[in-house]
Length: 276
Ligand code: SAM
Image 1 (cartoon, rainbow, N blue to C red):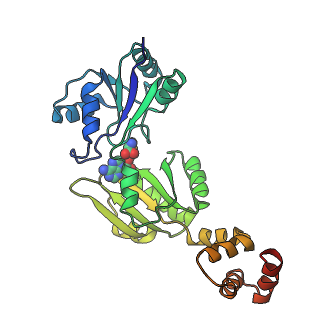
Image 2: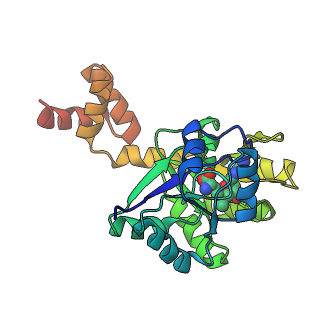
Image 3: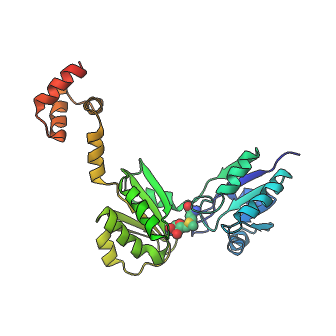
């Protein structure tokens, strides 16, 4: 018998209109829907007028339920996996069933849609070319601090998920370990109280004492790290970078000398040997 397919279906993160036509069709067509919280998913299915057998699949029963889902898939049944909100498997259950399904040669198909971190990022105004998503930080103090030390070394926009009651503590931890960086808080995306709060960590701590609803923290990439990475480039790499921008040799030498705090002639001699 041919295996069934496992669909990873994104659902809304607040506004019920944020679900694709394809996602609705898949939810209607599959044999089962595996849901993080079946009561929560029932509300969405009622809204979409879909009736379907539900299987509970959450962090605490992931192992047993993976087995059950795999058995059904191997019997040719198609399953849609959904989480409470947004894209399943991202800071949500599903990784295990995806891995094991692939090992069994079962097709895993993503059905795109709302994803909280992506929507927070695109409207944040921060650098979107490179970013690092760290999900939820650990609830254990030591592990949380270690992770923040790691984040401190990042040279890109950093995105974190956080529960409202932990937001203030996490902001204080960020301030302590990363310094008073510029951050953006994306709050209640796609909902009535959607808002973007921008400022330094200290400004936000002062002006936003009682966070309510769902939040994402976005940390601007560190200017210091940017400078460091410029200096990590070799002079030749830096030369090639400016050359691509159409700068003339003398201008490039002047710029590199200034960046590195060395006399122009030193760079000139170096370039003469390497580039010409
Ligand atoms: N898998 C989901 C996704 O990536 O779209 C996220 C699930 S995770 C368990 C829940 C966290 O995502 C929340 O604590 C919050 O940080 C973020 N989140 C989800 N929906 C949100 C919303 N509407 N506005 C702001 N943050 C949201």
